[in-house]
Amino acid sequence: MRVLLDVDAIAPPLTGIGRYALALARGLQQSQRIDKVDFFTAGRKVDNIDSLLLSDRPMASLRRCIPPTRRVRQLYRLYSDWKFRTWTHAHNYDIYHSPSYRLAPFKGKSVVTFHDLSFERHPGFHPPDRSRFWQEEVRSVVKRATHIIADSEFTRQEIVDLLGVSPTMVTTIHLGVDNQFRDYDESECLDVLLKHGLSYNAFCLVVATIEPRKNFERLLRAFEMLPTDVRRSYPLVIAGGEGWLSASIHAAIDQLVHRGELVKLGYVAEADLPKLYAAAAVFVYPSLYEGFGLPVLEAMASGTAVLSSKSSSIPEVAGDACLLVDPYSVEEISDGLRQMLDNPERRSQWAQAGLVRAGEFTWQKCVDQTIDVYEKLTT
Image 1 (cartoon, one colour):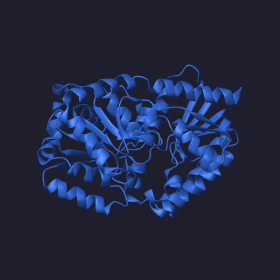
Image 2 (cartoon, one colour):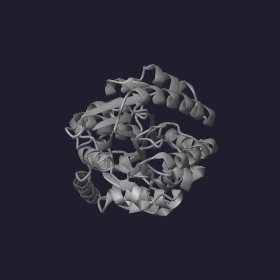
Image 3 (spheres, rainbow, N blue to C red):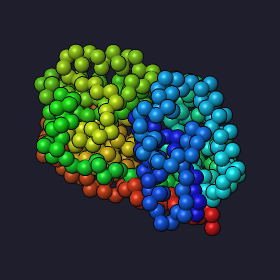
Image 4 (tube, rainbow, N blue to C red):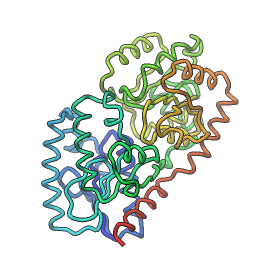
């Protein structure tokens, strides 16, 4: 079997989709079931996947300088599609797979992965031009795709309901978690803690871009409902980019930073993130909408107690191993945090349950099930 994988999502800093694309690329390279796999991005074939992780490569620098407006996306799509057609015209592949919504014109069997439909279900969570672009894009893609992969059964049902796709055309394949996310002890975390001015097991961690659907506004209000001594003993630490539609959120964050109750790290180096997860007392993720919720899985694999949402795909990932609350209830979020922070023994029980649950999700399983889809389409 000859596979062409789009690796456009693999760019620093890695998003959840980027992690998925990277794990898939490495897994396909190592699989004995694949005769040949090539990687394509930004109009060119890539031989070394790891080179895409270099922050100083031209495409990464260009993406940081040019805002991703609707017009920029359209121009990039025209350019990359032209280069893609030129390449595939001269090379034969049995399967073309795009792990990130888009699907370039392809004459053979094609697979696309949809991670969520937030731009369709909750367009107000995104800048208007982004929502309109992806609403148009996915409708074009579903007409051309041979098969669709969804990260969760929740997302699979969203695709069927919102886009009118036949249920037989969509397969659920859960994501996995890298081995680097594990239960590090305090001595192993010391270098990262010193770097960021934190103490082991003495902070609440959030890993998310600061944007509306991550529910920062309610989380901050819930955190402020905790007693002063609790907030200062367990400050809220935010690791993630500046985001969008979030001016009021940043203002509230700045107030908590000024009071010494919040630490804003921005993007965290890939090498630091696993130890940051493992060093946290609680991982907090009351997102309003997720297609999978990879940070929840990474936190569980790191042996950290998790408080998250009992909505969208999160219960499918968390099972009974996390404390799940109504993300629209400030009181429930605050009460959940108080329960975890006031009871170290119960917190430890949540952490152990998370470790067991996380063991059910592996990238190898994800890769194997993806190849199953390829084989069904080509036999």
